[in-house]
Amino acid sequence: MNKLLLIDDERPILEMLDLSLTSEGYQVFTAENGNDGMEIFEREKPKLVITDIKMPGVSGLEVLKRIRGSGQEAEVIIITGHGDMDSSIAALQNGASDFITKPIKDEALMVALERAKEKIIIAQKLRDYTENLEQTVQERTEDLRQAQQELLKKERLATIGETVTGLAHYIKNILNGLRGGMYKINSGMNRDKPIILKDGWEMAQRNVVKISELVLDLLSYSKEREPQRKSCHPNEIVLEAVESLQLLADNNAVKLSYSLDSNIRDACLDPRGMHRVLLNLVSNAIDACIYDPDQSKPFEVEVKTRVEVDGRGKNFILFEVIDNGCGMNREVKQKLFNRFFSTKKEQGTGLGLLITHKIIQEHGGEISVDSEEGKGATFRVRLEKEPG
Ligand SMILES: Nc1ncnc2c1ncn2[C@@H]1O[C@H](COP(=O)(O)OP(=O)(O)O)[C@@H](O)[C@H]1O
Ligand SMILES: [Mg+2]
Image (cartoon, rainbow, N blue to C red; front, side):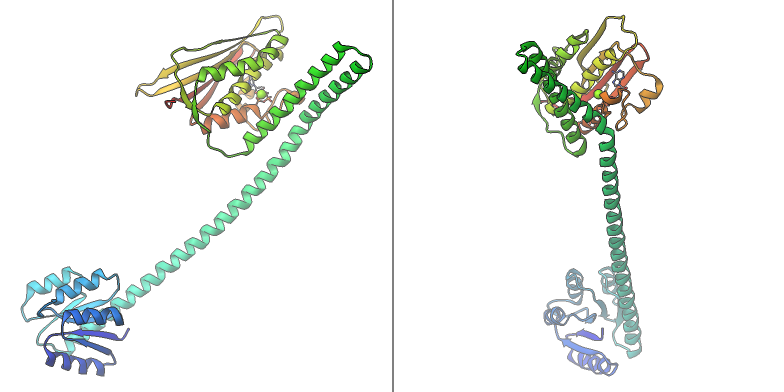
């Protein structure tokens, strides 16, 4: 703090100031021109600089500008000629701490130096405070991040616990199905009865499909992921999903049909994700027919696609899955997308709509439902169309 750089082209003034400042306890460095002054400034990094404003070559104003541009902090006191208001103003505008006029009076010089030193102390205090503040904020942020991670870990553990309990019955059910299939295969072979063998084989197959569906559902539930978008045709995704559920519909006397908008062009979607969405919605619709207490009506499930343009000219693709099954009351509608919510007891996992919702959200789309108890349900998925 007590290093002081003195720049003046008039040697007598330089010597006089050197003497009086040294006696005040400053470690004084002197230069007779701006260039030498800047060299010393860069080497010694003094916090205090006193410079004459009028000097041949590099002026005091130039020295001031260079110091301000150097990124190093220093208080610069400018010595101006008596009555030279213009230079004084220019110096202050360029960030001089103070100015004193020639002839220099010791007292005025000491006052200016005291003021400059006060400024340095205040600036330092401010810096310390800001640094402290930054560190405190950093520490608190880290604490918070750790607490959040702990919480997430606990939540995940709780979810795993819930999952295991929630799914144990369902898995037990699949295992029973597999066991039954194996038993039939066994007795078909022993008794050389191909019909029983085929029956057993189909039973085993159905349950293997169920378990692989469950694993896929669990995987897409547990992973936080971006949709794997690629160019594909929305109608084709519907066709594939309908095809893989056709047999289930036929076996349960449900007429499964589709009506696809031929104006739909390729779009940029995650075909696997959207396939899962449609599988979930269509299999729920078929289930709604199977679970309908009124089994006298002819059951129908229809899948529709449509292009929609909103007021701002944005294109949307709409998927609709419509059934005339059991429908939903208010309570079911409210809990629909909850984790493990199912009205199907051991036959359901309550994961289907949760995952459907997640995939649609990841696509930036929306899902909605209209339903009346006893009359059926319509699920609508709306995705913004990104050209494929
Ligand atoms: N189309 C539908 N009609 C009537 N109820 C439905 C329909 N789709 C879903 N639900 C209700 O929502 C619940 C949750 O569905 P989901 O998450 O797919 O789980 P799960 O099919 O394993 O029960 C179902 O158990 C059912 O009560
Ligand atoms: Mg389901």
